[in-house]
Amino acid sequence: MIESADAPEISVTAALLFEAGALRNLPRTGWAYDGVPRSDAENVAEHSHRTSFIGAALAAMEGADPARTGLLCMLHDLHETRTGDQTPVTRRYVSTADPRKVTADQVAGAHPAVASIVTGAVEEFEAGETLEARCARDADKLDCFYRALEYRTIGHRTDGKVERCRAALVTDSARSVAEAAIAMDPGQWQRTLLATPPLS
Image (cartoon, rainbow, N blue to C red; front, side):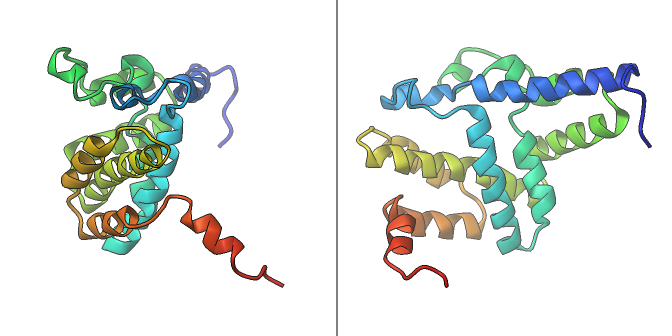
């Protein structure tokens, strides 16, 4: 059913979509501790994009729902438009709001169906109890692991982050993918592709 664009819940939903886009302008701040200059650091939207793909892949490997897992991954950092990207270092000293509370505030007044999928996904991710949530949480760590390997290749000191992210993985699929990744160069996919004849 198409609703009028001037309905209050449609306006709130439209504003929420602008807010989600603000993640493009929010740098992932933890890389500064590894010597990655802000100009080279990824933003939260970039992190969420690959995390979503990793989550879907892990879910497929683990027998979970890839679409649900991808949704959890896509929305897991939406609250950071309001709290910023807090690192493990800052969380030792600064208390931030529960992502579930921030999300509830973000979607207050939005179209009920939109509010429901967003709050449901964030609740499931934060609780970490379903297989989809475990895959999504591993995807979050695995994307950081991959990015640390990529930064390490160009000379940044990310060994500590590589090991911390690797140690945090809980699913067999995430662990096996991490083991394979650590043994290869991040650009290997391109060299392998270019060494084979093009498709006819």
